[in-house]
Structure formats: structure tokens, C-alpha cells
Length: 161
Length: 123
Image (cartoon, rainbow over all chains, first blue to last red; front, side, top):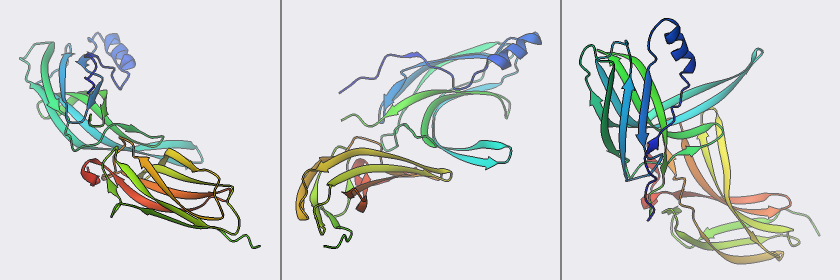
């Protein structure tokens, strides 16, 4: 039986360099998230996650961290102006890892949590058009409105025998 | 001698066509042609279908060497560990085992379910 690899800093799906440069240009601290977890996990295993979100002056009342499995279907649409790709994404499972309500005036929050990947789900699968994707998702909200979100992909493997 | 297309038949030893990942599957590949085909092979493949198109991959090809014009040949194969058969709202993954005659690519096929418990996963 193989063990999960050691926890490491996961890479963000989105590049926020431009957004953070813009925030810096207006004198606002960049929003930075760090997620540390094993990059691979098998179905039925427990994913341990530590995370930190530095959000500077952004007003945040709650932060949620979850493991999300999604179906991703891409469609190439041809037009006279060129080819564009329309992407449909549907989460099929969302597993809460952690939730925090930072105190007013605080500029960062962190935490630890875990989720068990359901044994009766499906592993990561990447096709040219279609995909099963898993990611740790951090979402910051101000009251009921999401103000910031980022995804940190993890690879979910088949059940270990 | 006419060059009619070969007749192809594919049967599995097991009732039904649903298996656990890694299962051993046996069966019989049979064909009948006017002359020996240049080649006969089994292809195990999956298709991941979405509304914008399909991703297709041949997971394994098993050549059945030196085929006679008409023959029944037993085969055994080990199914892969993944991906699993599933049905979601946007995507469906299905497995197929094909018996293919070369060079014309005439084929017959069986749909397989490969998933834990032999049941396609509903997302």
C-alpha cells in the first residue's frame, strides 16, 4: 500500500500577479493565499490541509475552505471572429475542511482541517476537452457576498488496493 | 473468392459486462472471413463524453497473431485500475471492448462497466 506524498505548498490555479499589481498600484496590500497539503490523495483517504489567507484591507467576515470535485466540459465554438472555448463547470461534491470568522480589523487568518475523499467517487481525469478536477477552494466573503476565491488543485487517485 | 467483410463475434465468460477495476476478464473472439485477415486485435478503450465533444483513449491493444480465415480464440485480459465508468450531469465515461479486423477496421464491440462494485458511479 502506497502512502500519500508529504504535504507541500499547492499551486494556485489562477494567476493573481496582475490583480495584485493593480492592488499595489492603488496602495492596497495584495491578497495572498497559501495552502499546504499532499498534492496527491487516493479515494477513501483523509486529506489534511493547513492554510493561510492574507487579505490586507479587504473586508472579510468569513472564510471557508473546502475540497471540491467538479466535472468540467469544454466546448469549442467557431465564429468568423475566431474560435472561443466555453467551459461549463459543475461541482459534484463539496467537503468542508475549515471555516473561520476573522475578527474585525484583522488582516489575515489561518487554520487547519481535513476531509475524507469519498471512496465511492471518481479520481482525477484530464482529457483534451473534458475533465474531472479536484481542488482545495478558499473563499472569502463579506457577510453573504463572496469577495475573493481561489483554487488549489490536488490529484485524486483511484482507491488503493 | 469474394472479399465480403469478416463476421466478428465477441463474447465474455461472465454474465453481464460489469467489472471491478483490475478484474481478470476472459472470453472468446470469433471471426469468419473469405481469407485470413491481415490482423485481428482486441481494443479496450474509454470515451469521456461531454456536450462539446469526446475524449477517446485506447487503454490496451491485444493483437491476436496469425489469424486463420475462420477461428474462435480465447482471450484473457486484466482491466485497468482507472478511470471508472460514471455518469454525471455534464460528463459520462464509458468503456468499450472491440474486436477489430485489419486492415479494414471492421469491428464488433461490447460496452463494459469498470467501477468499484461493478456499478457505474452516479455523480
